[in-house]
Length: 373
View 1 (spheres, rainbow, N blue to C red):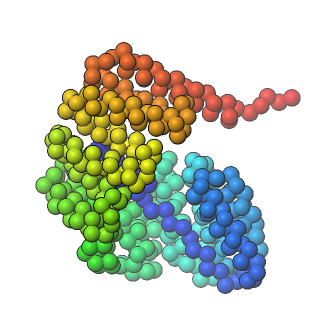
View 2: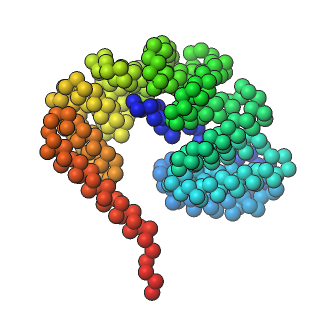
């Protein structure tokens, strides 16, 4: 999803995992190894990175003892690199991705798609560090390898085409993004048919591109088609429906048609509350979006309670001093300023600054080595 400013979230890029086909390992050892790797993946999904790292490191040691044609080692190297990426340990992640590529390259019959996957994932690590030239080169390389190895219509190529489009959209290189976004739509339709949710997702990306280009007449037909697919494919209260409704809200907000955008903002909030519960982070985003819309219409008495609620949710879920609370304080301050409540806005901004200063101090303390004795 792309914000009203046109910046695409990094998460839209697909971080592809490596499968673990391994005819070379002994069955008993491999079964235990598989169980350990599966547990590590589960721990990652729970945010328990330290324990997952321990299991992956042990799995790497064991995989190093498997036969030469075994692909377990590059797979688990890739997985541990992803864990490091999630923790912003980029140098360690890069080293593991490069080692995985080397292992795959040196195998008797290198699996080109797995090599492409590692290039893709390494590109994402560079993207998170704003190393854009290297990101672009690796994503292009992954696409080229996949097209040659798997053919232009494979699912793996579709993933790379999507990633290229989202990369250029994120960078504001709209002319470069457009052919990839269009190709994504065409590939999804060819693979799944015209009314599949994957088609709706590709339509949304193309609609976002046209919206940030301010080519508004092209946006609404794409959104209408995506919404029809989402409503046919899912329940009315479903995240996919909320995503398209959010696209409508962004379209009208961008054109300063705030009254027209408001009902879409409210529908997004209602769906997120129904799906995720009233204290979910997605509810906070919807509350903030609706509050900003109401402020633009000078409906301040309706907007402020929404920001109070958003702040309270984050405080309950994350604690009063969490950096995300600081961001919510800033958003609240912006609403207060539009209400001409400068003193209250100053207080909220001061709280945000204090939270960030405390976090920076704690981070510095954590990395400062103890004095030698």
